[in-house]
Length: 231
Ligand code: SAM
Image 1 (cartoon, rainbow, N blue to C red):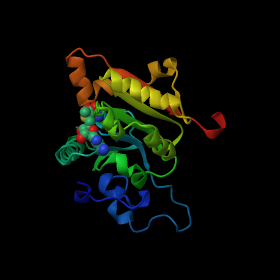
Image 2: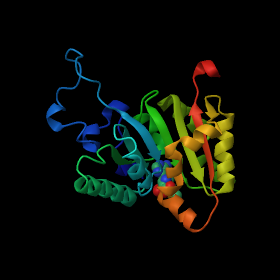
Image 3: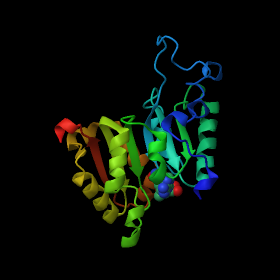
């Protein structure tokens, strides 16, 4: 249950030096900002892979966006530990690389606002989430009107939310929620075609690879966070 993992009380309480030591060297940790404002702004987490599983997406994205900090959020303890080890091993065998990815064990359906502030994220990923078929379990789905309110809050204007599933019913559900939400609009097909991230949704994730091996169909919905002026 939740009592087994620590929960930051606010985004400022997230210890980034633990996740991204190369970006937050220990000897600088004491100084912070506040002394004159001459220092560059501290980097913040910009991408979140919600329900990241074994971390394939993060590993694929890391070299594409070497200056963006990314985090995977995963509920299962063993799986989270696996991703941690995977990232450490990649860093060890590729010095100077994979320093921008990390993972945290948490329940994303409860604690997104504990991790990210307003307009902090430029990309959010919901790849092959659990389908929760039964009507009474739809409230457990990671995309819902109420959770989209939270995601809209933590995403910057122009930020992109990527969803994909091999379950048609869930694909329709995620698309419908996003279409109904006033703060999201569909990314045009021309943009989707040239977005290098889109290819990774299937090719880099463990679930996507499984579906591809079995020749299964996928359903994606890719939406942009609008500004209030556009509404
Ligand atoms: N995104 C990965 C991929 O495409 O390979 C994993 C997909 S897997 C089917 C769904 C993952 O979401 C599981 O690893 C599960 O533990 C995780 N998960 C389910 N509910 C979650 C929650 N509330 N918070 C964080 N992770 C969750």
